[in-house]
Image (cartoon, rainbow, N blue to C red; front, side, top):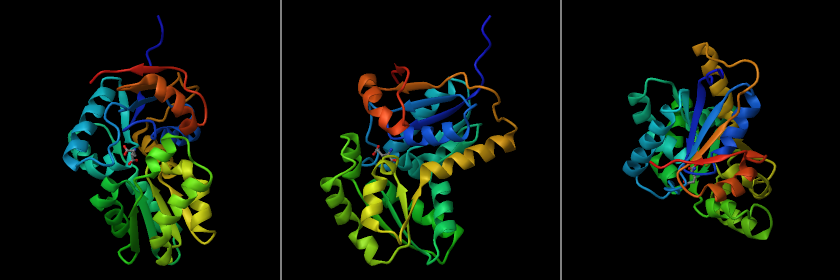
Length: 267
Ligand code: DGL
């Protein structure tokens, strides 16, 4: 009889972008089994109301809970901003979001205390990053900018060249006038624009990638729970709520390698 699958880390996002978080967690914790859900039927979350995003997040969590997960990671910044508190209240397993780890890294990184945050319209208007940064350092000055065009640019693969650079220049001009020294990439898609954003922001601004910070928090939490996996991972599972072939095609760019198999789930 085959050995039962070890309990997995469940990760969800509105679509393909959360694979940037999977990539960091898989590199940091190669023995862990990951079950990823991309809610491709309902993407984007970034333009939707808090109530709607909370409803979607609950539905994603319940799909993953049925797959035997020991921890839930909300890879989507917008869902972390709106739904983390509700999921933490309602679920019996640890629930981690990307905003607290990103805010923590920003506060550790800044020297001037002047921090910029970019994200979807939903994330920025929720005030979640501003609150998380101020909870850690009440003297920090936080300047924010929604960048809604970045998500479709990345989805189209336009991550280099004059067009993304022009758009980044327009979005970042106001933040740079505030002399920020740290810029939080507060959206799953923005790590793929790191080169362009870095060029526009210049060498005096350090970019903080929330996806990198969350992998450390996942590792620490598993250790505290005594639930760290050992040996070789039995492989990862990728679920989507629509269009598996397009997830497969675009996903490789986010994950940094090909995706073995994508399963379509209806919920
Ligand atoms: N995953 C979303 C986020 O990190 C970006 C894409 C969307 O709007 O759904 O905020």
